[in-house]
Image (cartoon, rainbow, N blue to C red; front, side, top):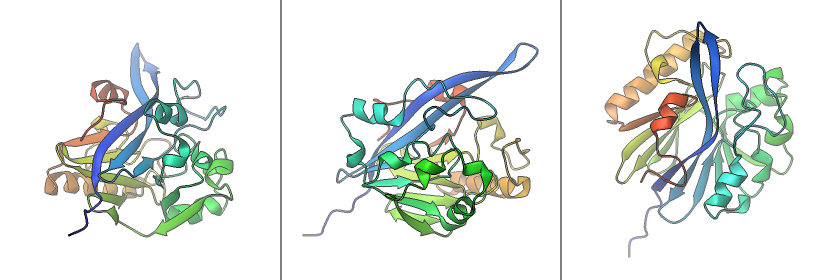
Length: 245
């Protein structure tokens, strides 16, 4: 008998918080904070990021008053931290790595360039360091695009920060879903000639990564692109306990 191939079966969008940022003249930018859970055909659970560090008030738009956290979101699905097999680390910003140390049974996968930058003491990642650099965590370091399992691919997308990665998930019914994360935080930024935002590290790399993702969307006939912090888009998406399959 041919063994079954473990592939993505369900994708849960875990919405942690929303906020509206005043941008002048009665205008607001709707922002969302979330992370993601992938359930495979054979019942493995893969987490993408872990949300905001508890008690931290970061510079810029503040999600410190989170409506929920990743532990609560998983609990509502009947899962405990020890049920998570793998954590895909897109990057170590404070709103993406705040609960990493809760998943000490998991293998963590991150780009080597990003891990080296953070471990080298870059101040950008200091607020969450106790969580992503906890001694109990096991990291697998990768370089460039990498297939985690059939139907689940990590895509190196530097620009927001060195070694940032996005995630491509091929689901049986929905088809390919692209989690752009912070490579493209808002839908209106998904353009080859886009501008960098203040927290983006390198505009040239950011544009190159955006063009790379645009190419993937076209080649793979991606059915859904989820933008990392687009509050308006997140209002229209299925969020946990609903899922994409």
